[in-house]
Image 1 (spheres, protein in one colour):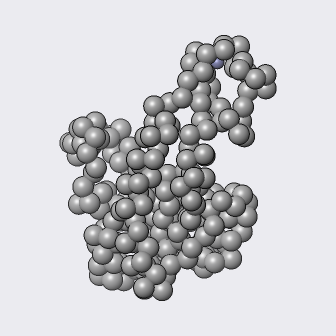
Image 2 (tube, rainbow, N blue to C red; image 1 turned 90 degrees about the vertical axis):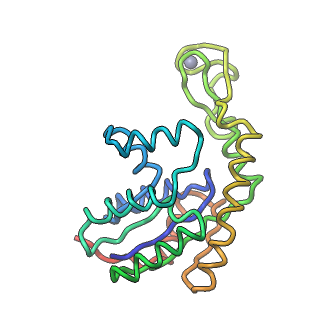
Length: 220
Ligand SMILES: [Zn+2]
């Protein structure tokens, strides 16, 4: 098995790219956020515990995430190429992944870092707003209502910003992210597997750059 790690802040577009590559080129896309949500949905003992952690605002421990990941990887056939999205997030997790790949004879092919400046991210993330009545989601720069101040779907004139997208909250999330991942970037750079990508480009040109720089293993 051959792993490609996508590193990038919330809003950097790495999830979108992972999804596109996975469906068009038959790669496996493992998002740890999705694994956690799936486990919670299955209502297992483990899922209940994860849910409690999430609700109390704690980060899920490395051990728990790694268990979920291990379970998922075991289900995959050995010749798969896998995009890891959301793992590793810390240096400890990166070392765990290294041990795992070495022990199991798998390979870490490439680590792609989606570079985007804080300012641009804040603009992407904070531009979102929604209709307070029907919940339709808009963005002030690239998806605003056809008639200014009036919801396309229900005609309401009441709009609100999601609490998650408030500028202060977004800044906090980005700070935490950069603090955690900076050591990771140097770690992978030193190993010669890092590829830095300008994530301010369009979705299409990012995809082209990725295809040029990632060696895709032909899969059936
Ligand atoms: Zn509406």
